[in-house]
Image (tube, rainbow, N blue to C red; front, side, top):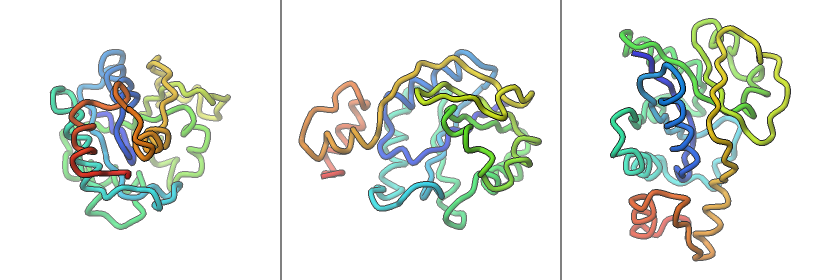
Length: 190
């Protein structure tokens, strides 16, 4: 089975993430999308990061009606900060029956050369790239392991969503109803 790994802090998971994942299933040869909830991204501050178990629960709620999607906490059990190359090695070892690929925005591709062991990742795994508004030319643009998928370009920011929640403004249509209910029930981001 071909599994696309969609890494993110998902702080919170929003309709932009879901639309991209659905496009990847519909427009590529991937069979499943696994949402890898990252405890801490090495390139991001953890200051405004909600607890990892809350973020995982929101992902589970958001994707519960789609059998092509799965939430995973694999990086919760790994050294922090977690690096993609280490997560890939762990998953390949635990699930040798699957072929793992990465899903990422074109904005991440522009600094992919800064990732730990990026050459190893590119040699052993395919990358499925979706467009982002700040798209530029990339040194890996025509690499044979890279597939461009015309997912919708949605410039929705989790930071914006958190600010809306903190201001007690509506986030309807930006988040799944079940995620909104979870946030309200637990009084998250207030």
